[in-house]
Length: 293
Image 1 (tube, one colour):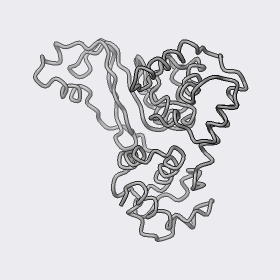
Image 2 (image 1 turned 45 degrees about the vertical axis):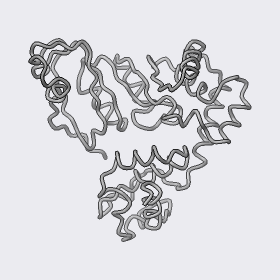
Image 3 (image 1 turned 120 degrees about the horizontal axis):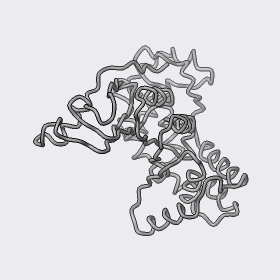
Image 4 (image 1 turned 180 degrees about the vertical axis):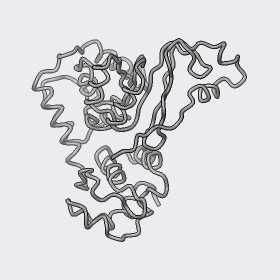
């Protein structure tokens, strides 16, 4: 089970870094602020923020939101930890329905009165460039949409989604995103459309090379290796074919002592693995793939 026990987090101290020579914080009022909460299990936080409009430490904030990268349990704890959140920003797309906050977290936030903005709707561009098998699925569907438009329509179909933030690198992409938003509506996708999305998702997942279910029976590793997380990143690399991105994720999510290079091939994990995965053989191969060395 993930440890989400709180420690101190001084919001005023963090925000002071952005204006070290500005006026005293008790003379400043910020109308809206968004706190980035990346991995609560590695950097747990205690919110203790008081009420909007009053002093947050020495800082006055009108409306406070948060952005999030962790698991569903941590997301719910943050939502429940402060009753005056104004909004939240989560990663969500048709491949991340059970990842990070997931669909469950999206619905939980809305049930607690939080507007939800979506980041990574195209998963860093991976859903705009799906594998050939997924492209066939979309081509056979009765819609004249690009893969990116399929992903955007899937999000706008959901009543819980307030805003979709998609990175754009050209005027053509801006026009395509605006067109998808204008043509979309809650409940606009047909059962056949949803079935096509499901088949595309399975086309991605069929590329997974290691049948790890993330059960965690292999943990704790006596050498501190985070085996399920390592395999998840490796599988994501195979699914999306975006090695540069997954190498960043590998070093962002895992400290050096938690990475595959720390494996001593003791075999304790393999004795516990219900999938009979050759973990000790995989670890050096995965480390090489995710570091290039």
